[in-house]
Length: 221
Image (cartoon, rainbow, N blue to C red):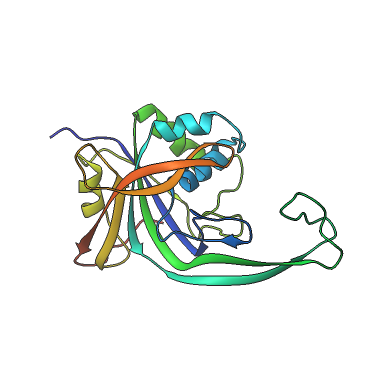
């Protein structure tokens, strides 16, 4: 069977946060990395601004799959924000002394394997950028610094993303949730994590299932 090129990313960090339904003073984190978050990570490596139209083009030209090697645990960080320049819902300056309560959710000690496939020249372009990033890259939020190099290179060993999810090494063993962009005929769920422009999102169809890794394997640093 013909193999496909796959760019392998390893997302390992003390904290990660992949907002999917964040609004106002509540900043959530999804249990799995979002596609918009991964494209944002790639955009940092490439030196693309948030408004750069090339990000939407990149998003259309890659398929993504994720394996939760270590899902981590949720943590909610409670913050207060106080400033004379804060705006209210009407866009007016808040009265002096107004305080906003903010709740921000993080994943602690999570580890994800993210697979991207597309034209090999695009994957090579991304791999080079990740190894020599223009801007610092982070795992969903700027405070979430990777614990190891993100890029694990390009493989042409596997015929599909599903096969790669099953076979690629993992630092963990046991039952793992996997998620990937859906194909025609799949039973799907919807994730609102495709960025069509400056903070304008639409839904993406994905499939979710579980795989079992019988034993932990060393992952190259």
